[in-house]
Amino acid sequence: MKKFDLCEELATQGFVKTDAYMLGWEGVTKHYEKEAEVVWYGKRKSTFDVEVFFNPDRSVAKVFYYNQSKTAFKVKTHMSDKRALNAIKATVENNGYAF
Image 1 (spheres, rainbow, N blue to C red):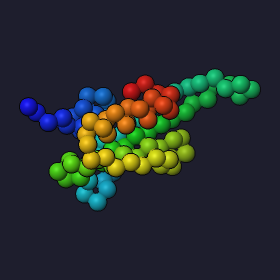
Image 2 (cartoon, one colour):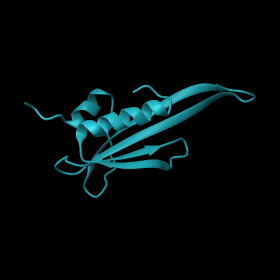
Image 3 (cartoon, rainbow, N blue to C red):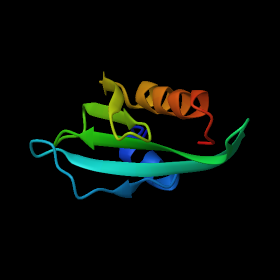
């Protein structure tokens, strides 16, 4: 039975390889964008970025979540690929974007 690979699953979900490296760790990223109607302001565009870095043997994933101010508001380290995917999906959906 083949082991679940988080990097391959994220690639099928639209994540692309990033040029940023973290101490030799490879990474993938995805940019989310939406436009919403705000009372007394009009339409407002909001962004959400997810960066996932993998150690060289891909046993550890470190996930960074950024809002429109480009400040990491959540950083998580995952040792299990399936739990990491579920956590990434839940965080994206809880912030109002479709995974």
